[in-house]
Amino acid sequence: MDASWRTAITATRHCLTGCAVGEVLGMVLATWWGWHNTGSIALSVGLAFFFGYLLTFSGQRRGGMDVRGAIRVALAADTVSILVMEVVDNGFVLAVPGALDATLGEWLFWASLAASLAVAFVLTVPVNRWMIRRGLGHAVVHQMHEGQHHP
Image 1 (tube, rainbow, N blue to C red):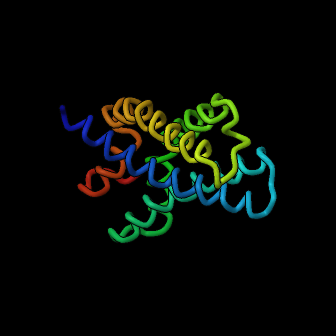
Image 2 (cartoon, rainbow, N blue to C red):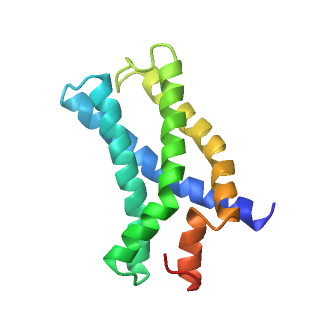
């Protein structure tokens, strides 16, 4: 396995973490507030982007980057990855009969969420590799750490 695959797997795992945190938090909050499917999905996707960006942003800030630069790197590094992951994982849940109507206390909810995130991970890794090999996506983060490029 070449370095671009390892970097893509790491980048996708990072993306998966932000997406999973955002989606679970969004679904829990939407359930607590009595929201229906559309609101729940919108909140979950919004929080998935927020937490995905936040992970990269906070890492860049810890590395000494200014706020504006860290925002730019997070947007450049994560937007496509999070978008692909969210489209795949929400599409998967929509395709599983009854998953959208399952409650937090049902196995179908958690099983379909776990499966959707696993499928999204597998399908997002090649997208991230393609981007990294072209100097895009998480390649920007690695370039910043190596001091090679300032977007």
